[in-house]
Length: 176
Image (cartoon, rainbow, N blue to C red; front, side, top):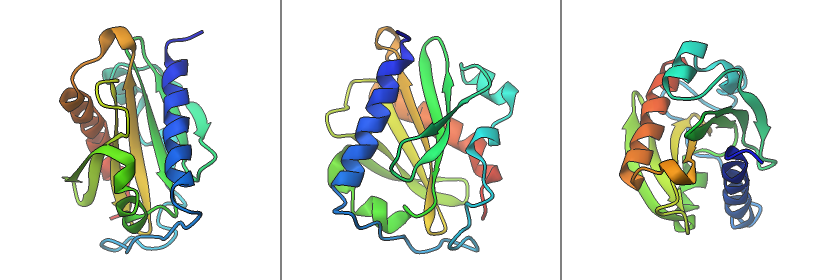
């Protein structure tokens, strides 16, 4: 079994937990800037990073398509020490994520380029080498998920910084 398999399970479990706790209501957030409803239709998470960027972040190409079954689709990229995913959620905007705050041990609002969002660690995830950087885009969001292998785990702060660094490379490709 690959090291990254556990992190894929963690990603899926977190997404299902969040979706399940939403009570079936996916209230879209308010559009930010010019991006509105459907802003992410043409955004392809699998090509948001160049092969050189993916490799610079410690993973290999090509990415593997990912569909968590919760409205979050994209690509996972595997590395020796980490796995990260770039996902889009066309209907999970700011209001959705604000409603999920209690599903996170850490929920730190921040800004990535021209997009507001937050860095988050799911409930029970502190110290486990995983973090999500969410960027609000119109009525949806783009998510960078990162998980380190158990023998290479940096601090939560470093893990979330790495997620934000990857998000900063993705952000210029997002609708404004």
